[in-house]
Image (tube, rainbow, N blue to C red; front, side, top):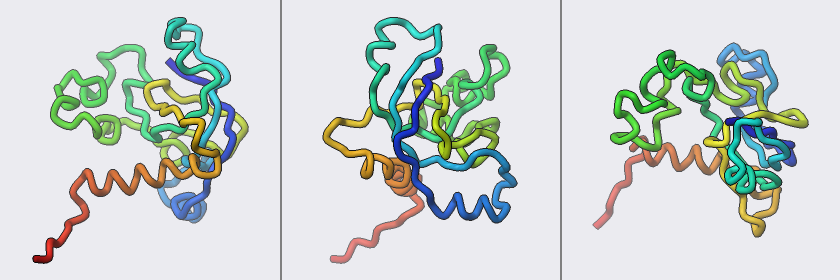
Length: 160
């Protein structure tokens, strides 16, 4: 189920600049750092879910697995829809490792340098009222930095 999001703020980062130079061969709308407001939900969204999201400020996970893009689960990769049991072993990585994924503003999915965008509800994160848009827009770079640590790509040296 998708949400229509009005973009309130969008950030630009080095990835966007690299894409302009040909990185990833992307030719769509750039932008993957954003904060927005949910202004509409797809008609298949249940009323109880609608009340949880409609009107809320959000940021979002930029990876969209093939389970977001197909209504027939037989056509999915088995990772992001968990038919291979991958989520139980790596619950935070499933959409990131979907071989058919799209990435907001980077890979086969228009980004957020626009007035509105569509994202699956499962990719959204509500932004608390206490966090201003100017700070909330940096949630994606923070998430990316945390992902590096989760993947064990950073090793800490323990001095005694």
